[in-house]
Image (cartoon, rainbow, N blue to C red; front, side, top):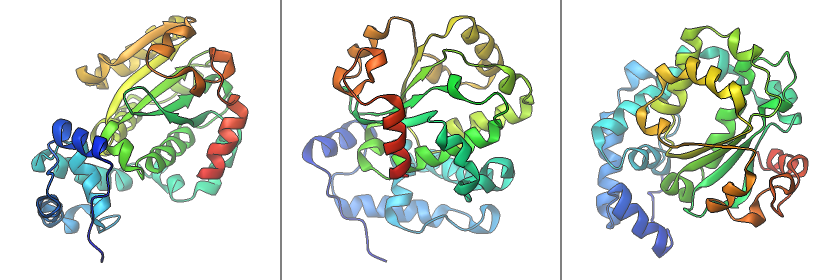
Length: 267
């Protein structure tokens, strides 16, 4: 198996070194990767999804090269695949999620925010009223796994824009608290993601209800990164260049339907 060779551009390498405690020397980086790989208990948590250095490096970056925290997250990542089969059986069989992908509910903007993070667009109000929440979660996981293939976003993180216009709460209200907790665990405890910001649009009273449900499961760090914009779409331009945003948000980027179609082809 070929070993990881650092080919990061200078600006990204500096960011990784300064913000994530990533070793500048590749030999030291490989040493950290080997230590995490050897610490993982395959008998208890199942075989690693991948033995490749780049896969293991994601967890080190997500936890700023803290071996203990990275190990816990990597264990959680593999454990939840067995513990939450309602979601991950569909992640492994994406053909079952065509109805979700066809609705254009989630896609990645063609570019990154001003701080370098990836930007995922969510439009849950476009969902059919009978959508299975586990299908939506599975498709979200597939999208984030694709984002994490880019080293830039392992380092710079991910931001989301979530347009709550016409969102139907029925899907959430019929989901058990236990399932809610497990879904939160995917993002906060298992996936090697660095969530940088959540931008909510047209949130209204829906926000109060959703927060009443999810807040007990959310870490304070994430809560502090939620930005409420209502219908003040121009505020997004403080974070994201206008040429990336769709026209209905005051930008000159692709229409959501076209952007979602491009994203599905990438997936």
